[in-house]
Length: 340
Image (cartoon, rainbow, N blue to C red):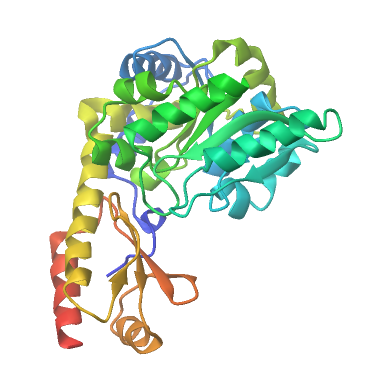
């Protein structure tokens, strides 16, 4: 039973087949191939607006490319303390921003705290040019703790950015899981939040190194191209990545896989909720569960070949994926029953 991460899951067979299909002949490179051009149009249809895209091999690269496009070296990116940008990117954002800073403002439920952010913005503007310039906001959807911003919270973030003239980026490493749980289409999500850019993550959802920077604010189209090249992410044989993404978007496979992962996580949560030895401390709305347990319980689970990650203190993370089966959940339930 592997609940370590959706990154440990295999590539979906349909996506592997799509790579083989485009491996039959020569094709244009650096995004000029027919598959990459079709991908741009397909994503435009999904989100219901004009947009531009560049491909990246990692979520870190996608996030950094988007932020460097929006934030100058004297600027600041406003995000949460728990964000990947702040904790899990090896300070790559600061490297790409060439002096720009990541500023963090979190609520008790680990979302962006607009009140704290507003107070900092007012202070920074009073201190111009001694304080960094507030440049953009970055939120994660779904959050690093597997939660969702409500529709009202999304609208408030949009209003906040409009009021303070900030650009808005979304880290969508588990974007499909989020919109499935919220019962939103990509178009509905875009119309509510109106982000300037989205790092669309598909690697965690069954793809191979398939990340897309989706640019909605076309004023930055030229800047995006230059940053993309400087970042070393202008991939040569783009057709192999675009073909995967086209395949996972086809017939809403990406949403099917994400819904499957969410459903398995929901089943797992119900099992945890039945015993006093474990406490689920997050909402469990997507495919990530954070569990408090004692060391004895942790050791027993690991001894029985149950894999998961230590998060912090006595908190552990369990993640389901498109590969998690009902049998995995049943076997885990039997294991927990034996612990009583």
